[in-house]
Image 1: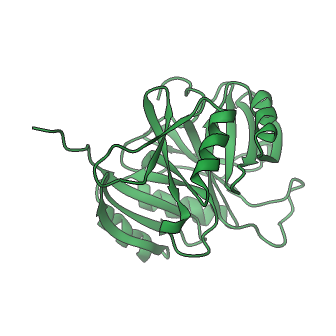
Image 2: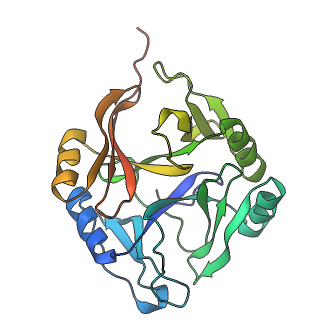
Length: 265
């Protein structure tokens, strides 16, 4: 990616963890990322890179004053959707039944951010780029390839995101993916949505990142050896072979070896 993302497109992800250095070490060994604890003026935020390009952020969980939260928030990956105007999007969010979890904040000259919750309870970030468009490398081994909303009310979610960003939803046309919904910006599929009923009971609504990997099974084994958990062992599905994993601090993510759909003869 060499330019800004179109509004509505997932453009960045970051992880908030109790132990930042441990997370940096885990993802370095798993995906080949490079990163170190950032400067004090950015709260220590680390921009991890792959092949010299920004790929994801990792930060230590802390209160605005820098103190340690009590209780500690859950370790989660946050997906950020691109917007051309954070303030206008936030106004649309409240008008469409969502809520502002973190109000608009300027991040130096890099851009503006906010975090919202949709009416179904899933949290997602917003990013208005300044000098930083977002992920500089995608769809390669160790990089983001897909973002998926898991929600208990797909109809309400579809209506909400269409009201606040230039996102449309369509049923997936991929054979074997019946019941799956795609988010589109224009004619391009940029993310997906599925019903929580397909997941274990008690899983809350959430956005989940997918990372492309060359070998799902070896990555699954490496994550387990490093203290991670296997939430859904490697399996074959319509878009390729995938697994759902969690890092040692509980951050859940999917890995996939994506394959193009078969074309008719």
